[in-house]
Length: 287
Image 1 (cartoon, rainbow, N blue to C red):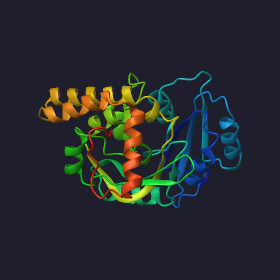
Image 2: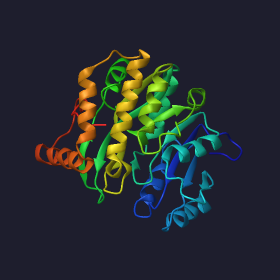
Image 3: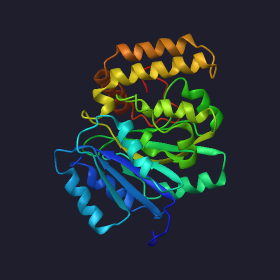
């Protein structure tokens, strides 16, 4: 990006104590083939060497903007909104501090968004990897608006760190809901977006998502499942989708089954069957 040039993309990444993986995450963004972006990293009061690692990268690449929380917010929605409010780009691209982006991710997503001006949200397929970077499985989701709209009430068909959103659309619908402090903030956001805009997934693997015991999904699975159920009920009550007792029953089961068990079963099945999903995964616990 040239000096004084407005970035097309604002990459938003919130981190806390990510010293093990943040080098790979940052480097995967800096290595993008599309380079007109700013990289806003929000450090949520890390107590390890995360901040010093981020500062080292910022000293050699001025596209990086570092925002520091003096006290831990403990809510991803608040941290992301802090970065979004500082963003200058026409698009907001999400990233997590332990994931790895394909080097052509931005190039491919920008190309798709510019071809379809009605689309406000785009994601991609992903590979799941473990803490050692070992492949677990591949995840594929619907790609077209109509199919995604139908899928959304059943499960979350977007990988959060893969998404890119038009900034003006995001600000019009009100950013992330900061009352949602224990996860599922992205799921609730997608329902608000789809009321007014078109959405899509690219049928390409553009993100490697790391699955680990310290993740929000693993530790706060109960709260996330409960909030997902709340979102589905609100959507049905608003008339966006018809009442579906099967969806509600599956959502309740997802709350009752402990998150570690769900993840263990899911990954065990993937290893035993060498699962490479070619269709949406609609197992009742999938969020």
